[in-house]
Figure 1 (cartoon, rainbow, N blue to C red):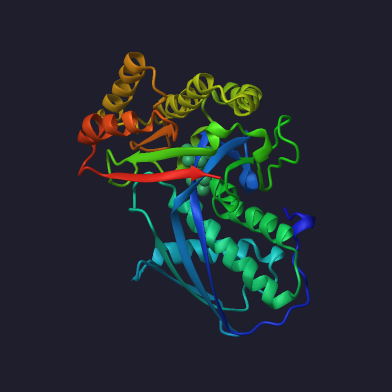
Figure 2: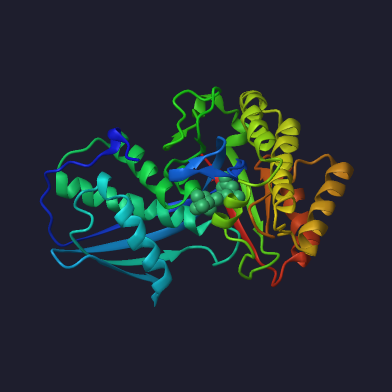
Length: 352
Ligand code: DP6
């Protein structure tokens, strides 16, 4: 299946060229878990784009050589990743007709630790898609910035679904939702800043590294398990429905309802994995201990510290940058860090 809007220009002039781009990771509030053919999401999702956790990528295109891809992650050659990228490039040829007419050397570096529960596939494919659009602009001529970003998001999605949300800052929606004008299953759109209360425009995401090993289920396998999960349709429906309160919450700044919804989404994602066949429990003891401590802390202090989870054991601690921040960070340092493997925490912000 090809998508007319993004088909590539047939006329192009290629030459050897190196481009570099950087792209942040993102953390979903309403989660994408379950997809159809061609990377079409089973439900819409919304995420915060992080400010600091990024992938920096340089892409050397050597024109007129036999198509091949070589990749280096922090200087070390990664053969498996190169194979994945080769497959990806072949898949997106209709959209970039010059793409197989040369050899690539891709060097990539993350500003955050590997296997930290921060999606490196999101920032990684985001950065690759941006590099490709830069080359496309050079080889095919003028292209508007708006179209370039939209097409980069479209291309990133074909590499990794959540990557398409990393192309924009702030809050970003991917997947068709009646609640979000212009939303699409094919690419992400920026959630309008004017519809977001100021409390949500300066937020913290501190990722507690509870378990730094490899995940026991890849997201590809995880999404696949939703095909036979008896609760899947209800879950997809619930995610769609959750956009209704989310929209109101974002506008009004109702932190209490925000916390309830975001934590519910995280727990639902893990509940889906527990109800899959085979079942997966990706939380570790430390994950549960941290969640219980957060709940106790909120009960005792009423302060807005809460969590979300990705498909792993690490906990994303979320809290606003208001006058509660100091008490919250003191609590994290004193009470929550001891549940990490090596005092591991990645401190990021979402400010826009
Ligand atoms: C739990 O985007 O990694 O982080 O499309 O197969 O590459 P693929 O999956 P991926 O899935 C992310 C799932 C999630 C939730 C989310 O980011 O919305």
